[in-house]
Every structure is written in C-alpha cells, then in structure tokens.
Amino acid sequence: EVQLVESGGGLVRPGGSLRLSCVASGFTLSGYAMNWVRQAPGKGLEWLAYISPSRDSIYYSESLKGRITVSRDNARNSLYLQMDSLRVEDTAVYFCARRRAVGVATTYFDNWGQGTLVTVSS
Amino acid sequence: DVQMTQSPSSVSASVGDRVIITCRASQDISDSLAWYQQKPGKAPKLLIYAASTLESGVPSRFSGSGSGTDFTLTISSLQPEDSATYFCQQANTFLLFTFGPGTRVDIK
Image (tube, rainbow over all chains, first blue to last red; front, side, top):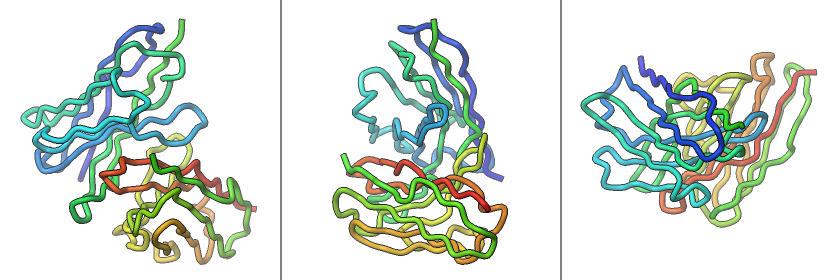
C-alpha cells in the first residue's frame, strides 16, 4: 500500500524557518517525481513545488520562489521542504503528493499524505 | 499562470440527483485536467485524470469530459458519501499546476 507521511509542522514565529519531511513507503520513491501542495484553513489547494526523481527538474510556484527549497533523499525514501522567512499567510496544512505521469508533459497527484499543519504566528 | 475557475461554488442536491460541476481554464490546456474529491480533514483524492479517465477504484457514477478550456465533472446519481468539495487541476507540467477554487457539494 502506498503511504506518504508528512512531519515537521508546528508553530513558528514570523520570519522563522521550518523543514518539513515526507516519508514514502509501499513504492520506490526513486521512480517518481514528487510535489508539495498546501491548503490554508478553509481555503483551496495551492501547488508549491515539484522535484523529479533524479532532481534534474525542480519547479516552484512563483509566489513562493526564493523562500522554499524542495529536496529529496531517495535512499531514505524521503522528500523535504525547507521554508524560510515564514509569514502569517503561510499558515496551512502542507501535503506531499506523488506524481502520476500520463505522457511526458502532464502531472497528476495520485497519492497524498495526510498533511502537516504549519502555523505562523507571533 | 493558467487561471482555473469553477462553478457553481456550492451546490445542494438530493440523493439520486445528477450533479454537474464545470471548470474553465484561462488558456487551452488540451485534456490536461484532473478532478479531486476532498472531505473535511482529509487529503484530496484523485477521481479523474486526462479530463475523462476514471481513476482505479472510483465509482462509475463519476465522469469527466471536456477539452481545451472547458471541462465538466458529472455525478450521475448523487450518493450520501459524495458530500465533499471537488477541485479541478490544470496538469500541464510546462505551465505548472493550478487548482480551481473548489465546489462544495452538500446533500439535501
């Protein structure tokens, strides 16, 4: 069974940093591109970052570019999201999601973790 | 960025009703569109990809159609367990990824 488990969320002050982790099981992480998606309380879904299996393609949402860094360690079956200069508006549940590729140029999110809550507040 | 809109923002229908949700993209995305279902406190669940392909295990009362800029998700006979919020997603990797604002489906 495919499982994705996020961790690392919590309360952080504005301007602070946080590193989120996502551990994969039930499949070989090195065979899949991965993504981070977030959802502010009561709001919609916002894609944040994409990383290819070998890290040769990395994409970021323009709105967060420069403040987030996605990385992965396939040997540890883990995906990471480093978030810096956090703002109150970054308060959200952060999900990792596996890419389903249909052809070369499409990305669907076929498996999701349960999410980890990040609260940015003074 | 490709902007995605959805209508209606919410719908209330009875068990057995047909429910149609529409999604519009700000530019042609061919059939690079997915639909997700999300229940409160849970992660989204992939229902349909490539505009009309049903994900494995998803009931056949769900169907998707459309191409280019206009897409629809149809629930042919609404069931109590279909109460959720539904999101569309633009899936063209070169355009990056955007979600629609969501449509909340309630059971009367």
